[in-house]
Image (cartoon, rainbow, N blue to C red; front, side, top):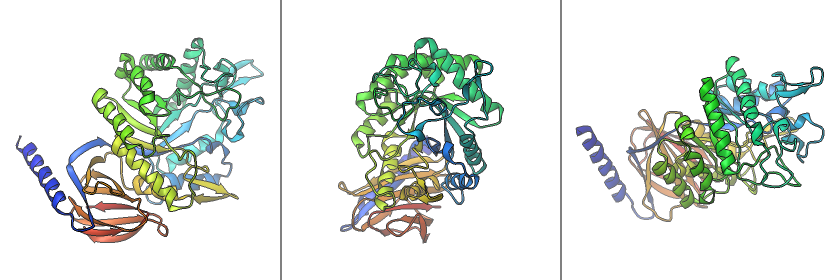
Length: 468
């Protein structure tokens, strides 16, 4: 009781000091380490649709280092491995982009006239996963965009011939479950740290029709629940050592709450699963909607953790090499952590025109989004707890998020304004390091010392401040 009273008193003093610190045109940014939110679990990225196309081993190693090394790279935790549905194994694939056609471990053996598994297939993608683990990845999530094409109603893993047509017949649900669990069990037996499987991707979209761009499959809400329940009951019966992720929703706003509610109304899924996965597309800067969804999970489903498993700028309009691109991504990460309450965050995709880097004439080129991501992934570690940040300026152009990790506080700031902003800090004391990205800096350490009382934040910039 005494400890709780002391914490409340300290919290009140933090807020009081925050309210009186503003002077003139400066704005006060306060950190209240006694007001806690979600415990963070880690950052990551996806292997689709690039890992299978990296032939050069040296290049693959360099990509893995840049993404997963904790000292010289982003220090990511999670590697999301795309379990291909086999469109690259067939000559009549309907997918218009060859790079999005994937190989599968499951194939038809012409000699035995049977469907079999061969884990030497998709070797480039598996090698990339090996390098990611070698350089520091701690967990693997196996995700599917579609069931294998042999299980689909029309024989294609790119959606039905008609839009919004469920392409997995119910009589093949168990075959899909057995297929994905066989693959997951294989990698577990090989010693891979398989954290979870994620069998359903963006079920609400109208995949299929006359023009198809990728492997994927539409599911109505009821079909989505029934398939996930079959995964859960089968995995429970088999004693699987990895988790099941509930559907990776293509959008998390109110028009698509039916997928959230119907899935989480299932006692089978609520009892077996602890994570709901969502993609942050189409909600950029829509803070009221993100706040509403975050509150929905906290109030209605407090036992379910929300993870943000996929985001890139859609449509891609900003110059990849400009600070504007990095600032855009940094804002989205903060919004997802702060308003959605996400316990993890993964980018889509690592190596691509809309990713963190790309390959130009055999050489890697880092985009500004890579530097922006580093402001979070290098410094906010698994186990850090998000804490409250406050700004006394209602029309502020500074976005902020803060975490505490032991005795350290990590504060990330984004200045969206075209001019510098004067800041006065409260709630932080001790030694600090400050890292900057702007038009001329790329997540570079540029200030250290005793924690500042005030600071001039450069225009169009991202800062990470670590206070110990």
